Image: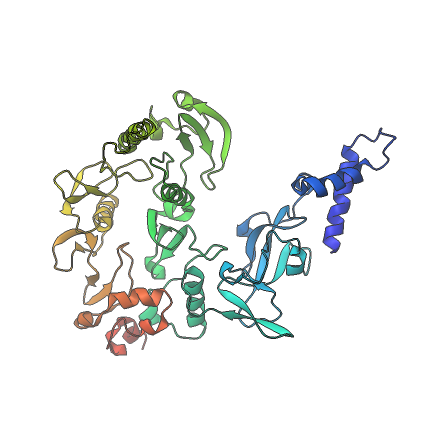
Length: 468
């Protein structure tokens, strides 16, 4: 507990200096102030504490996770290493499913009993097991971190991938399409996920369950790809899930925040990497005075064409609800988080069609989605050659990706994000491809990996024959 006492001493010194020492009737005003903080509002202590490096999650070394409010009287974050599979002497689990008999690490008064520091490099070693691991006590003298093999989710998929890679289960000629997801501290999918084989990766924004949401970038879109964080896209998704009828946050094409944001008639600047506001809040009619205002990008009105229509409709419905009219006028318009028109639109003739972001009809009928149709337009505008086709299973033109694609004398599975989701095999083995098994394999079902192309000899895989 040496660090605690050093911290306390530093606080005492700071408070003594900051307190009027002229009060002769109270020779220890700093100690009294410290006692007042501890009893009334411990959070005020943080005003006197200087946190150690690293200050950001990106600075934590491999094998550790950045966590807020776990060191220096709960005022600072640190890099925390949790116990892994097979490690002994655990006291609990980070996974909330296994906390029935353990206390909350972040709020417990016994936090120091679960975190231990080996040095002063701001790295903590926790006695808790990592996410998806249970602290199982076989006897009274020892406890061990054991996996929950029946579970699913981001950390489970991540751990299956690591285990399969380290144990040689992954065959590069067959399983190169598998990818390692990025997970949050609580085991959910991180905002940004980069899918597919290394040379064909595409980054997309994801919800906590791993589903695709607005925001994507190919490797050849260098600026969008390298800076992508998806924080705006995830925030819009959260607000929509919470029931917001109209969200006016503006996201970039890759899911990042735009620098200028306006809500309820007030505009402000944000840091695109984090979405944290800075500077003044000004009325929308004075937004051009903000340092982040870009006339070319924004123009004279903040709301863009699609969201202007959608927002006006939402306000009418809200006002009618306020007056007791529960059923307002319906709208089928759908907008993307950048304010443009969504690809998948329901027309008044009762049919779904694919549109570009400017509300121009794309030739293909929808067929259940429009990702492929939009991507094809992007390829054309960017002068990128692709062999991927937009068709339904019965080979009718559509806005969706044909599940099994051809390239030369080979075939392979793709998902509806246009990412390869199975091995490349020679065309005669097309009938043996089971694309659903490729999805199961990616999600941690290692037995499915053997069944994606079944039955297929090693000679069915071009990558195998090339490496021989």
